[in-house]
Image (tube, rainbow, N blue to C red; front, side, top):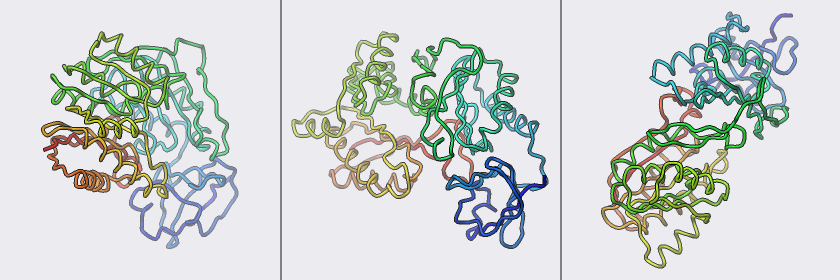
Length: 390
């Protein structure tokens, strides 16, 4: 059966310039038959070819393009070559232990996420079209990387928007899902079966390492600590006292275990609401030389950005009131909708309202295993600033 042909209105040439998403409201014509998940050819209203992608009528993102060329043969060999290219790039960047192997759109494989923790792979199929290639993907990963185990973390809500069920479990034989990885000389516990997302966040590795410049001999407060990332690194780099806060009891328990494994006796963690804790600290005059803010994504959609902006500003304002002159604010956002420009604007407004002047000493983002694909702003989500509070 010949491929179906989809005609779209690409008014801003967004797709023509490399963005792989075709939204439902862009489609102005369909020719031929297909079933959900099939590959289709995409053309604009001037009949210029935009590429080939898989289609899902149940999704707001109707087509996700895999190639800009309508003449390419998208088959098992095509998918295998894409996976090999992604893995070769990580090896070229020097990764061998733990890293993100495939980062969806950034690796030209939309809907697929693969993280490597030592000799174990954690895999997510987020879209119907990529789920159709599941067997090819898993066999390719096995042949290329030779992992001791592969665990499927398809327990994410986004799958339901694609008409897919949520589930998780090992691919093939069962194996021990709890392991310990190395991050900047620290030993961190990872559970690929029950940890967040794929089991552990690998994207802050380089930003964590920057704590070595500002931690020695300092009192550090790590807000939204999750499993301890910034706080553990601060203690590792010589902080005199570290307190990590998180609203999740499970996260605090794991952070505490990580501190014990690394014999970091200056590092403690407690369950607390960060907003309330900083408000009380400001009221009572409690201060820290370094405060880290690494909250979850406040803006999970574009429509939520106004409320998220206010939330980010409020938490930065409260933190700035608890840092003495000469101290440091480490502030992060993992929301793709909070652009770097908007993030800086927010922090600047918080500083102005707090009556503080800031000096930027570090600006970081995602590491090379989480590359940003130009033309696809959704792949650029992580921001990290270290600011000297004057």
